[in-house]
Image 1 (spheres, one colour):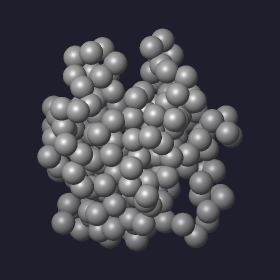
Image 2 (tube, rainbow, N blue to C red):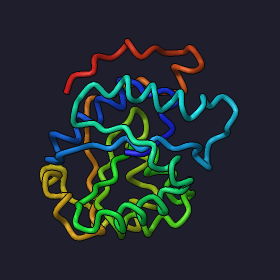
Image 3 (tube, helix red, strand yellow):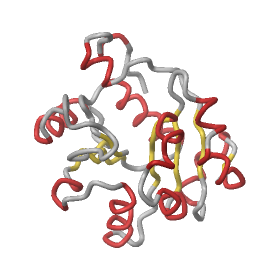
Image 4 (spheres, rainbow, N blue to C red):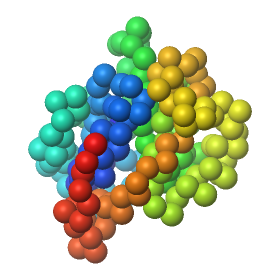
Amino acid sequence: MGGSFNPAHTGHLMVARLALKRLSLHWIWWLVTPQNPLKPSRGMASFAERLAGARERATDPRIVVTSLEGDLGLRVTADTVRILRRRFPRARFVWIMGADNLRQMPAWRNWPFILRSLGVAVFDRPTYALGALSGRTAQRFGKFRLPERKSRLLARQRPPAWVFVHTSLNRVSATRIRTGVGTDESWPAKG
């Protein structure tokens, strides 16, 4: 589960716990990125602050917060996926992301490689489902979408394979927290 985590919040925790349960995963890695190339650096807390905040928020022992991308100087998800597959060739990775990212995925460098390399679990976010499921990524890889009831099989599927997971919609967002429009305590983080 990659991202800026600017800041890490209950929505991240909720998705991680749901992913552990619904996808039958053993671990979740929060890959804190030094700088998302699609986001402005203005308003971005330092990498060290975001990493520390994510470690504080990751209260489940199965969530591992890692500085891998910063340690290796990575900025692009496809490069991170390539490195993970090389370093852990027997591991079955699943990329976890929100529906907002599925919609914008064609802006990611080498995005088809990501879907061809590992399973992808997309978690619903308020107002994004329709746009995400009708967008370019979902259309191009539509025949590889698993029914949600088979989400537990995603890690064992040969890529490309992806699933859209409907959830209770959590309106907490890092942008809303940073701008003072919302708070992190406005949503209970139950798994």
